[in-house]
Amino acid sequence: MTEPHNEVSANAEALPFKDASCDAAISTFGVMFTGHPEQAAHELSRVYKPGRRLVLTTRDANPSEYIGQFFALFSKYRDSPPPQPSPLEWRHLTRIYDVFNQYFYIRYQSSFGLRMDRSYLLIHGTRY
Image (cartoon, rainbow, N blue to C red; front, side, top):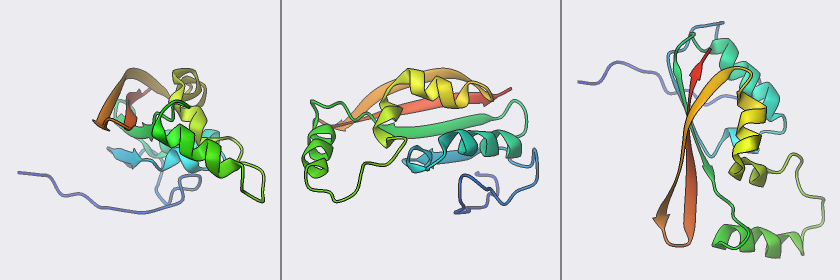
């Protein structure tokens, strides 16, 4: 039996919840696209109860894989500069630590592929 839960879509940089009011959150290819990831990490830590788990999935945009090649080709034809910080930085574990380690103990990361041309990172952390 599953416990009751609420699904909410919100701006990751300004979450509409009270401090320490959330037991869990999942970000599937979301937080990596915020304009201010450090602010999003702060907001997640603010609303999380201590000891609760965070689960994130991001693309592992290795330049030699399909998505890396796509972004390289796409960037040749865009009219505006690439977004900063780049969502592609999330494929580096050091970037995950830089953004989240102040608030969460990052204890697990794995790469997995759903298809041969796509790989993903699954990151687990616990709120300090």
